[in-house]
Image (cartoon, one colour):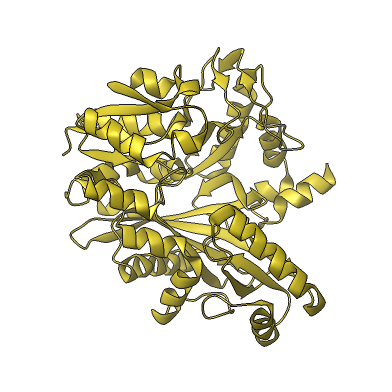
Length: 447
């Protein structure tokens, strides 16, 4: 096992890695921008190094500064968390060149996972179902039109290197395609540095379901079941749960088999997530491969008893996975609500000083956060303040515990999305498991 690692991230995920490392007897180095000087991850790490000003480009995305921090503190490995440099193949390569272990997959796997068009091509060749569409990127609007005529409207234009809904357009009719293509292309170029697009048939009322996988460097690949991620706004997840209330035992086995097959297809090791959409008829289609630990990993941990971050550290140190057969079947149910510093109606950021912060507790409740009373939520980064997770013997108990916890959670000084989560957990459709990726739009229309 490593003696010391550096965490190239901030907030709750940096704190999460520090805790896992400490339990394994591994010392930690935090990095921080000047506005994060008073952050909890800085206080709780064994060492801390300032890497630049508030701007992410000058701090958390500054590869030379991060590598220098690792070198001067003698860190043997770097955990990237999620976001920032977590899926940056160039960073993984730079770590290797500097003689530092990147706690994640290989640069090749990161590149393939980040290129949705290429990943889709590979999965299709390996017999993993994908949504009907183009075989790779399309060169121009005319090529996209030919694919759309073949698969049938409506279609979705997607950025090959995309994420978070950027560079993505739904086209209902052929007359709309050219304008939508160039809009999506410009958006993708601005966001990702590449305007490359591919085409898929648009399937309405789908479920977004993902499967957590773990793979070591010895060739062992296992899955830890699925997570339901359909409660999202503009392709940003808001609530996740495990297991999915929609997925049958037969489909669960099928998704697990497909996820393991996908991981083996790219020679993957470390933690990763294979994302699928499920049609109303129950057909599963591969969407993408996320090559990092997910924000929502705690719900899987709660129902399996596996510490996913510890397994990441073990795998990267060259050790085999330490998993028991029993973890493959979920025990009970878990739900996660992302508590963001945002207006709960308009979803606009609400940075500022937290005057009071009293997280909930009690049976089955877990709060992953780096927030505290007096801490200032900076406007420069993601608005996530806390992840509230509830676990129960079944979905009904997990829901009851989540409702209780949301009522107990006190955050004053800033606006948060707690009222939004209360509305979701009071909605009949959500309580009955009858929802899809369009749920939030429907909820807002009813409000």
